[in-house]
Image (cartoon, rainbow, N blue to C red; front, side):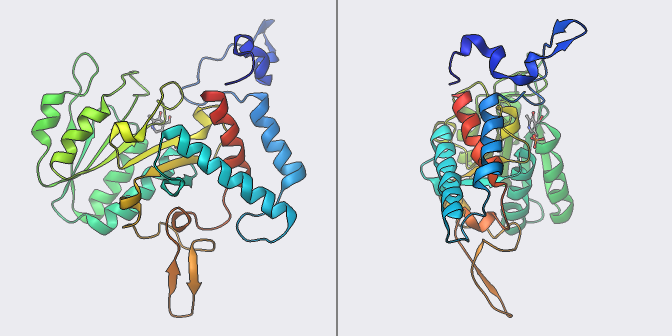
Amino acid sequence: MMPGKSDTRSHFPALGQMVRGKPLVYLDSAATTLKPRVVIEALNQYYQFETANVHRGSHYLSDRATAKFEAARIKAQKFLNARSEQEIVFTSGTTDAINLISQTLGRKFLKSGDEIILSEMEHHANIVPWQMLAAEKGLQIRWAKVTDAGEIDRAHYLSLLNIKTKIVSFVHCSNTLGTVNNLSDLFSEAKKVGAWTVADAAQSVGFLSVDVQKLGCDFLAFSAHKIYGPYGIGVLYGRQEVLEMLPPYRGGGAMITSVSQEKSEYLPSPQRFEAGTPNISGVIAMAVAIDCTT
Ligand SMILES: Cc1ncc(COP(=O)(O)O)c(C=O)c1O
């Protein structure tokens, strides 16, 4: 919670400007939020005084950066009520997280003829990665209809579920309609046919209390920039048992236990999915942004 939330305007430097003689008004937070001073200061602090790589140095600054980086993971775990911080994977955002799921779970476990259910109210980030996977593997995408009231048509959705349904991926709060979908109900139906469930929480984490255990999802994704945080950073929550079955998304440093000329062995989650130097400043500032949101 930002100190003195009643004085919201003063926390956002951007809102201190005048436009055509009037204080700036910003009404596009669904696209991206303005950044409060505390988040900007967290970025500055890291770049000015704390710059070091994480998980690969044995010196003062590296230890400090690593401690803050991993504290941010615990912050995100608590934010989503995940069971363990191992279930929190840092990605570059919602889009990246959904691509991670389609390219790991989808590539490894789905086969020709399998089906994926999306709804007619999905953001492109929750359509295109699945279309790419469907074209590659010969899958079918089934579309749950949206009613005139702007809700997922439950009866139509239930009629689509069958044993070929392998993934159900729905938006939690629609960026176009504002509808908040009852994902715990919809996902419990998906579980009856053994499907994996994915929640696109890009819009919902900013104003709802999101609890992955109550939603009953296997995966959930959000982007920091929609909750006062920086760009190029976000979270993929994955249920531990499912993450453990997945192959790496990208190869590189920081995700391996050993490398030889013949082959490499991979670390468990979350490091398995975090190849290369991560967005350290973004992760640290995202933790501050989560404090502003809750
Ligand atoms: C519902 C929803 N899903 C996914 C996204 C994609 O988020 P990003 O561009 O941060 O990856 C957005 C962004 O507008 C969104 O509103």
